[in-house]
Amino acid sequence: MDDAVSKALQHTETTRVVEVGRGVLANSGRIINDLLVDEGKPGLLVADERTWQAAGAAVQESLRAAGAELVEPMVFPGTPTLYAAYEHAEEIRERLRGSGAVGVAIGSGTLNDLVKLASGELDQPYAVVGTAASMDGYTGFGAPMTRGGLKITMPCPAPRVVVFDLDVAAAAPAPMAASGYGDLSAKIPAGADWILADVVGVDPIEPLAWELVQGGVKEALSRPDELAAGVPEAYAGLCNGLVLSGLAMQVARGTRPASGAEHYFSHLWELDHLGAELDPPLSHGFKVAIGTLAMTAFYERFLVRDVAALDLDAVVSSWPSWDEVAADIAKTMSGPLIDKGLNETREKYVDAEGLRARLGRLVSTWPQTKQRLEAQLMPAKQLQRMLVAAGAPSRPEDIGLTPQAVQETFPRAMYYRSRYTVLDVAREIGWFGELVDEVFAPGGVWS
Ligand SMILES: [Zn+2]
Image (tube, rainbow, N blue to C red; front, side, top):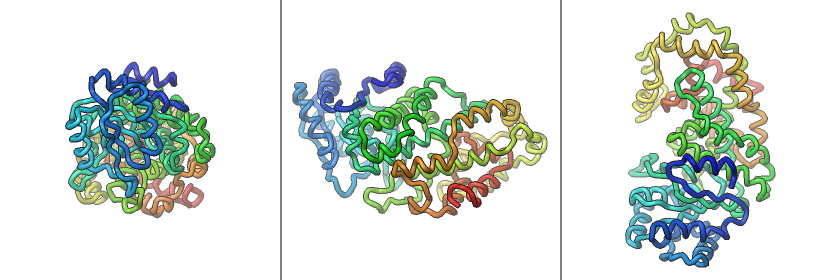
């Protein structure tokens, strides 16, 4: 087992066993049967036709060889792509209840989320066998779900057991690993956002969660062309990186270790139904890739400026009142997002003296803070080349957007969540609009 994974497992709330490696599918029966025996229940494998073919049949065979008791598996159609709709979670929950079984999800994002939620509602553990390195939700808690036409993240515990075979991940359709690569690349600007929140005293870094996510991320992102070529060895870093992200969220009991402002671009586009008509729909990781590149380019422009030379008196005297901020939110957001933006932004809003204290910490530590940020980040054009090599989107057009649409997402991403990011720092200093313009000016990643 990866050292970082075993370290994480000493601190996770829910996940007890993680097996990531080449050929681990052959041991999946023994590993999962331990859970079934502990619970004194049979297993119910839940797959779709594609994931059944990729891993389900082999897991069933391995479980039988281990002497496991199984009920009739649930196999959804392979096309159209299964949606994370609450009705499906209810269907799985009722099958689990009716058969008195423990769920074993065979799949990636959606199947894992459905079985996670169904099991959580029955207050029982579950296992997942990953079939693609497509996102970091395997080991996380909570399940994004469509319910009554709305997309919400429903609370539910992470899996007890995770099995992830690198050969299976490498054989999955190429866009899936490219998505996972996009999701993992987010940890670069997300880490920078956490550094800033730490420095100003809003959200202190938790060393273990930080190390789990950031310890191996650059290494894991370093072989994009081999991932695109389906070389199994290259999948170790990506798969472990994705698994560690979820474990770090369990350790920190929140999503801060794995996401920053780049994820809000993705969430907002998801709410706009971007690419929802495609089959399969535009993936989380593909939207995140563009958000990550946008934020990396923003950081690049931010770091050109000299924070140490800020005139704090001038900054504080031009700081808008809450009423002015609220008026801007009403102009920037639309529909139900106006209320959400108001509530979320209110949480991070401070008065003039609060602002002086907050930015004062940044000014007084700037040389060291700038060094930490530079060590954390990478040049936007380098990241762009890596995304291209991985087969992930690198231009707004690749996900059906214009550069202007990405530009307009910046202020919405700033108001969308209470999490403090570089977008807030820039807004508080008064640089926000200029920096966004600079990202899209000639010479930038998308000019
Ligand atoms: Zn993500």
